[in-house]
Image (cartoon, rainbow over all chains, first blue to last red; front, side):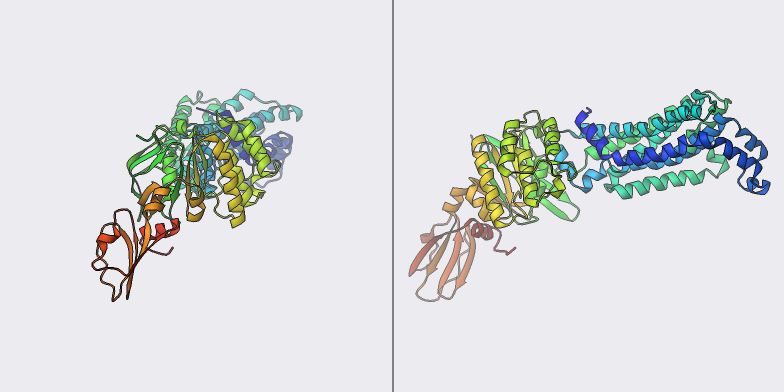
Length: 258
Length: 294
């Protein structure tokens, strides 16, 4: 069902997205261990209490940032990986089908003897591979960077939380593919997926529902803080949602006139 | 009974506000060069894309090389070569990369044939597809379609956008290659004179409907112009089956008729003269299409 040739072609086509994405995630992820002490010191000593209050920070929460693992989690899993990762997941998904439609290369691809099932799932696997590269390589690079910066951290807690974040990002990637199969215009599909992500993010300010929204779930904060076990249910829901969106995207594509 | 590479029955495709293909019954014999002719927008590309299994019909069915294009698409397309009307290749790939990419997808790829055609067309292998001239892109598309030695070649306006000299060169080169391989070729074109030179069967379509389908020689033999002169005022032209086009001048008729018409039986009075003239494919097409200039 998956063709290696097609997989490599897709990875080649997404190489610039991977390069730029990797650079952004490396800068935000790997630089943090080297800036941690200065940042916490600056926040606790130089920022006026009033401003901290406006930012929703208390002296206790600043104190908590002295825990390097917690601070890394706050910078990485709860912020940069989620935000940049969501944008990158959408960027990876939006062009996979729509790009072929826009340039009429889909007819060449299929007339070369490939079936639609092979084309779709090879593309989906290539996109998911790209997403995995973007999420895991910078995450794993944080560990040697921390050691170099002389920081101690609990790797498994970061890895566990990243697994949940990755599952959520996979769902946004699948949403982006589905929209590109329906709209057949990469830019519009990306904007639509981005709009949905932004809407879900803004809904986070509503206290009654914020705990159930994907971004809150993707951070896996209770698990990270050790007040809850690993969120298998969240993982299962993200996996089911991703599968559902991909199957819907495939069915849309399989019935489409080219 | 004739072996058919393509057979469609009542094949139709409806888009919102337009009936692109209407109840098309196409029969393409194995080993033929079949000219699929009609003006731009006649439904040729939609039909070809249906035959490839890329577009789904609204009604009707088709068998291509004995397979259903929509249910057995990938198996069928292994035996097909397709050159699209517009460049549909990956522009960012170098010529050698797209050759190697296509080779990896086609089980019957013939390196020798591909190299032979590359030499013939003298294509620069290190160039990106997008930087090639339109003529070179057409040549590359033809190499990609032919190098797997397909049983059936679907060429959708393969010479569109080429100047007349390049067009003739392209067709000659294509013919040389094809004669050796004994393939079935469906060649769609709106340029009737170019197809007239090479096709042995033709189908004419317009507004999605089949106007006529026949061996080319039979069509040119059977459809002719009759110029019938009268000594006095020409009478009304009778409404007879087989008269495709009729013009009545003061003292003569100019008729285009098919094989069903017997000139002698048409005449209500003795004619002064009856001239018969052979028609070009283009004239035949216009007669079937109702003489509409396109």
